[in-house]
Length: 165
Image 1: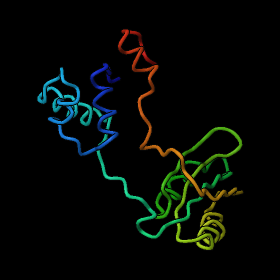
Image 2: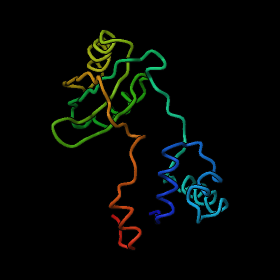
Image 3: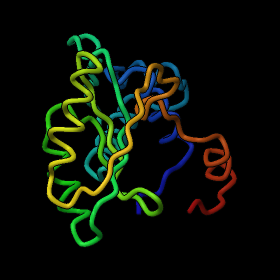
Image 4: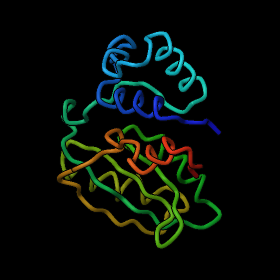
């Protein structure tokens, strides 16, 4: 497992503000860490698959203004197979398997609610193994996954030398 320290956390949080921020700018903002050290740490975190730096497109910019969360109840021996099939659809932005009332959770994007309805009823529900779907239109997202930051309590524990699990 990757061993984070407070410098790594600061670097990650700065990259979350702007994934294109240069090592020299990060070094300038941190004041006490060299550009070379920043570059080395970023390269190491990417190599160890701790972080990835990528562009995140806004579906709205492409005319996909409607989002929906869909929960699927699936035959138990087909959960992973169904999840992989669902993940292959281009308008599916998120797929996760869960434990509890629903087996799979997905998010889809579309031009309008009619397109959401069609996709859920004529595509998702016809995937072999899908027993039931529950759909919720998502009009507002307050915080998306790419906006997540390293929690303060983790940063504090790392700074104090405590083990973070």
